[in-house]
Image (cartoon, rainbow, N blue to C red; front, top):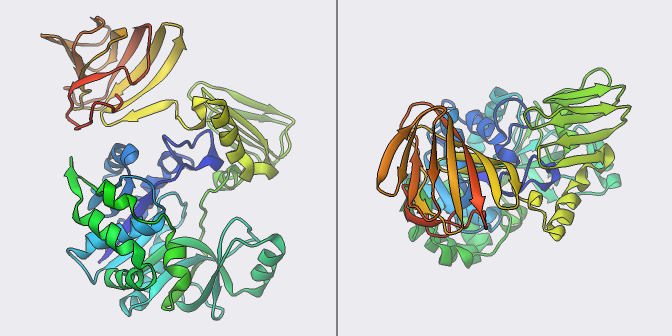
Length: 476
């Protein structure tokens, strides 16, 4: 049995504005209806695979459970990193956790933001690597290069290998310049490094002990002192903070001697830029890729995406352009500058623009909300509450609220009064009133909230009770 480890982190700045720190690219439906994270989880849910272990940050924990539930996957464990420390501490944490019950079991480490159009072929490649992993090898799955890519690290094989044929790995190669990438492509004995690894739990723990011993004590302590929280396992913050921030490649892979590679050429992309998204979307006869409510008139080689309902995006006479529109931000760039989109995020952060990192739809454990209008002393929100979910019992110091139910039924508490509010009915929450909304029904409940007051920030909450065990400083 293979236990997958899905790494769920990062901010995906090269895919701004759809990918932001508060809602990075793996959770977005970039290709098709499902998110990249959901596709990754489904790809590793088959015979021979145990329920996946997920490691992520606290801000994403409820998004992870919601998206897994939507595709019918029950995770084996969800580990919560107190802070981002790169991939080596994350992998080691999961290995130590799995070792408690299956120390010699196989573990497959996979990023959660890749596109693999042929899941069956990928699982066949994994199966081809199992004998080597069981024999104590660290197996990596390299992608057959289709062009001289300078944005990826590469793998040098000890010899050319057929598809799915395990071969000894000679070395890891850092991201090359154009000339070096073209030479490696021509040689035929190099693969792209996809960051996907298969090994026995005992093998990787031995590797960490030998090659990265400074990680062992703090991460072991972080796992040993982890606390259970609503089904999540929170790694100990003090111990985890002492772990060096380092990638699994630098900590272990580039110095290990027991490395095997399995070539994979059945289609793969890390969607590292809007140019790659355009390719995966399937361009038309003129090379245009259209998403959402987008229209191309006399355009060539252009990506047009409208990622907000009702927002029409029209391009006229564009050549090799990227245009991505959302209701709070628009990106327009030359396609040759796709890798520079992260510069837009940096520029917006310097300006203090919330669009740099904050997604317009704010996800919470109970559902989500988005702001429809915001001005001096008022804000209008659309709020969606999942069936059986409830917001915290809370009050506000600076604002009052009106709630109008659009669909479903809300159970509303205002001080000592508890009532059911149905479609087209409303309720007023005076400033300072202790209140809560719940969805007692079987379908999502949607309401419009109108806030009025001197201060409308999300931190104007005094929390009294919360079924999600969030502290006083938490949002929503």
